[in-house]
Figure 1 (cartoon, one colour):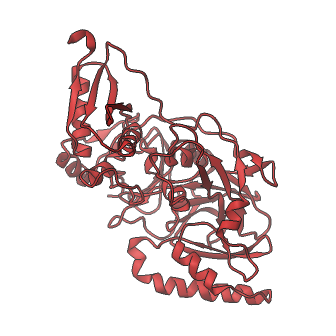
Figure 2 (cartoon, rainbow, N blue to C red):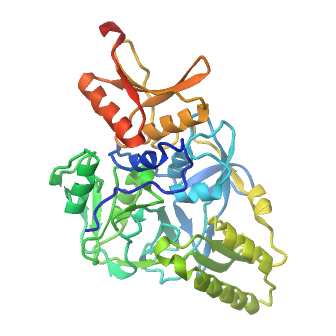
Figure 3 (cartoon, rainbow, N blue to C red):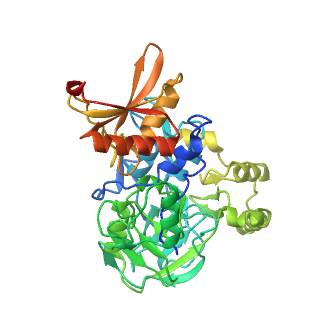
Length: 444
């Protein structure tokens, strides 16, 4: 079946500690999360640059234009994470982490410059309906008779459960879908000590979210998710997942019968803004052995495109972009600007103050139950764990506490002893950490 959203978290997340990293990564995707309403504004206010706004989810296109959008930057604020910034600005986890390899995804310092890769080369496919490029885990939707494209990051099938390639269509639209749990998923959860019912009704625990669009490929759907921080990763048993706010927009726009083209194009080349661009991503594991062939093909395309305008390709720059594979469209002509130059010219976007969907952590009171983890000597490791707990679904509210030079993560508030024991077990099982339930002060 292709209906699961359980998987290990993408390898781009850095280590917490060598002892519990694998289980920690798995944990971020294994439970529900609240849903949110959609950010209606697709233009972001620019504070510094040559434009007043930068486009986000929706991009205008003229004629056969193939490069859309613009690079932007934003300065991080206290408690920001790359996944929070990614979601707010219409990016996925992989989008933002490969574009910012020098930053810790779960532990940003205040006032760090974060590159927002909001420029894309459109995939080579007919501009009708939905086009999904698995290689950069991004969907492009072309509304009928409109000179624009809507684009959303997606979660796709993990290795061994790959989302299929080819031409299909949306065959139905379902609001508030229930989820019949496949037997393979039952077995996975049994092993984790977290058995599931046969059917999960619509609601915050349903991994399909609140909107589902079955495809002509039997057993595969485009749907929402109750685990939004898996978007931009290979996390499913084949289905295509969108942020809750994005799937709502797509659901309202498309109709039954809308064509869906699924491709795998890790290397994209096109003319835009009087410059030849190359955008590179690592091929997904299933196609990894084809990498040399895929690179050869894009080199041939670059030669052809350059010859059309009597331009000269900087092949050393091409090698650099292919090796970097950071998803950033980069000029590759001999007179083109390099990555530092185009990054320096990126539009600076105003920080919204409150990032969309960013988890909040309530204060602990004397009447609350809580859970305390074992100690960390490194504050960053504690901060990463707290951030991951806050981004679970459902959230385990957590914060870092320092005492005498050591750091602990305190999770809570919890309502009672039973809930505290459940949360302690989730943390212990998911992160392989020793944890201690703490009674309310009044009960001690």
